[in-house]
Image (cartoon, rainbow, N blue to C red; front, top):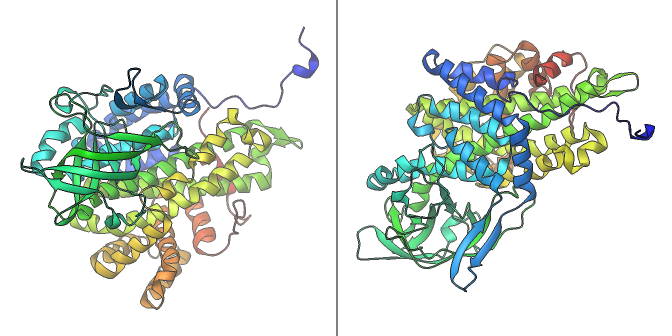
Length: 544
């Protein structure tokens, strides 16, 4: 007979065995809003299948296993031959294979491809965020490769394939391929133009030999890498295959793997080039411009990845509080806890709504939408990724001491939460990019104003926020020191406009009051008590 002290009571059941997509009302609504009636049923069925997989006990176990068993570097084989390989836990390969087969690298070739992929990426991040890196890089490499049409024709079918082939062999023999990226160098950091990796032209047209060191190379077991190196005419973009066409390994020396705070299932490496063969992508000397297409796409994935982490953190917090009792009732019904949960849910909804709107702009492809993306992506990347970490910490606190224990899964979310703010340009880089667009591309700000202007007149606090933003932009004295403030306001006004147009009235009211109207505090859980907080929490509750 078990001792009475071992009886477990008042603990919530695991949040498992549910459809991560359909349980997310905000995401499901956004998909329905941005995808036309034609492919909508197919997309919903596809996302629901992925959502059921993501919410299954099996895949949640794989996610934990991949995180608990980080990749291991093997520089040499048993005989002393240099091999430069990374060993991953089987769970990593299972998850990555599932992500590829779910179309997370195939957006460029499918109807409504970017919205359906954005929704899938947001769902998939909630299983294990680490494998999102190679999926994101491979997806984002396509626009950069299109700067070299012949190269794009060769590689794009491999990158958009829905087949995962993990073997290291010539890309032309594979049914699918993945791409990583290496730009950052020891001396340069975010200033990629300061890189010293050199590129020497070879006799073969478009072929070069690279020499140098990359301080941070993402997904080092990919089939190819987009890198920047200094050619005779200046910084140039190159495609570096891992295995050459004749089957020999390209010179791609893995010096060490990074020991990271989070994102531990994914390998990030320092790489040495020494006579490494590469193909030029785009014009010589125009490498930064060429690779910007990739950077813009990966920045959107930072927004989506953070939105996915937020959603999982909120889902876990609401689920816990809906089942946990304290002081004579359920935690979710306690006024103060309800305020915290509602505030977290509001932040999550604003991030998801913005991320899917940006994905829809990619699908549209028109000039106005492209102009809108040029200012909206860095502003959204700046703000949404910075909101992820405090949200994850607060959601973890909703579980009390349980949220500080690894078994809850919350510490993994907390460790992962700062990553997207750093990846693809930290906060200052994003804010300065916003300034660059404001100064050089007036059409981008015009497109932004047209977008937020669609909500004018619907909420007086939003109208005031738009006017205040225009006033602040009219005075550019000392503007660089205010760049973060501007990026934040651009993102908040855009989120407010989208919620006023698309969200239920109680959601839009709460956002405009707390984020635009000044009726909110510096921490979560400080919404005005007169709002319909119960409706916000119920909207965020995962179906169980």
